[in-house]
Image (cartoon, rainbow over all chains, first blue to last red; front, side, top):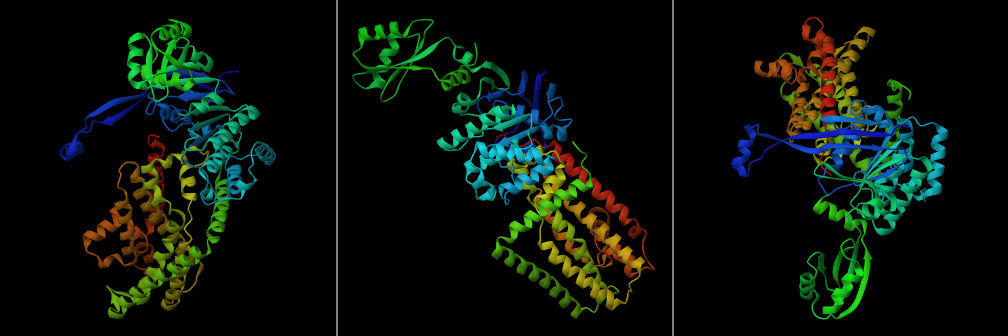
Length: 333
Length: 267
């Protein structure tokens, strides 16, 4: 089976007016046509298979939204090719819309004044969903989440969590091949986050729907994605399994120790001893990020014990969050 | 996927409308107050009109009932824009905040989908007032009720509505390019007040503006001539249905062009 989404050497450039400072500058801007070209997405390629959940990550302004907008047909790429479910999205926006579902964390697409069930009925008509499929879908929703209290509540009276849940259900209602979720858990409490994650996971399993997820919450990534794609400044930094990611910078572990004295001061001494490793400190721990290809944790610990009186210690596996942070900060070498 | 024709859209609009009315009526106080407000707005408009005519028995050869006819005609022809395209007023905000993007992912016509979200029920009161005024002046003028004249009235009412909708669409659509489209939109609203007077009372400069630049003379004056002054109908009156369709089509295309070009703000 061919991939559901193919992106080949896609680049998107925007023309941006060079703005000058101050009032005088603004007046000049009125008449100047001094544009610069900003490359928001720079030569990106990837294939996504039916049924995958892909975490699409990157710091703010990395070009995530621009890529999503190109996949949904709102933006036309400057160069390169995108195929979504066999369609060229920007040329076939309406047809593409039938095949995809979109959720923006903060912007509900439901009818504000209507109870959820009425929104569902309208979507049923708009997407021309057959009665049986619609009933089956509702049946499945009932089995996955407690939707009864939501169905008869107007969307505008819902909490953010309920609204997000409703938006996600609405996006899957017409059984699209692909669902784009843009920061679905933003602003939600811990229990709602986990509910939303479970729901997305279950919907993906039941219907084999491809899910493209952008998020800044590594909890979402750990809970849902096997594959992650990271971009920054428009360029693709990483595209592989999440397990692979952890070994990507060698095998790192964090050694935390506690010694006498003010930790932030003593951390300087530790740093002097271990010039090869990154050392940081807070009120409770001095943390040493150990690259196990250079020295084992035990070696580092022994070295420290010879010069410090270690009171307590802890060992932490590196989290996805740490790795991603490292990639954002340093890039891939 | 089945083809989405007029029937499809009418069905969807009907359902959205029914739901919308249901939810509006569930806020009873709100519903009652806005209904009362609407009635008073119409009465106030009518009173100022009446005071004007107590002082001037005729304006530029147009007598009281003729002007009343014009007034009723403009009220009726302004109803569709009020009822169906009221969401144009919010377009600027949606575009500015980036929320407009939420309308871009449905497999139906974007213009339809956007406009269908709001139905302004206040327009119906205006319609009732307009029809009442129209019938009253009709009887007083002794126009008679032949099928031909009724057909003419309906055709020209539709024409006038199309032109007003086109004006507002085009003004609203400018927000896809400029940030402060409100002034343009507001301008169309202000100018439409002049629609209910015979254009001959204005100076030639304004006559030209109201005919060719901001064609509000087509909202009531030119179409009404066909019914009120059948002997001296200018060519422009006969052309106005064509003009109305073309202008509406153009405004729709402009709106869609802006909307399809829209790519939202950063998130």
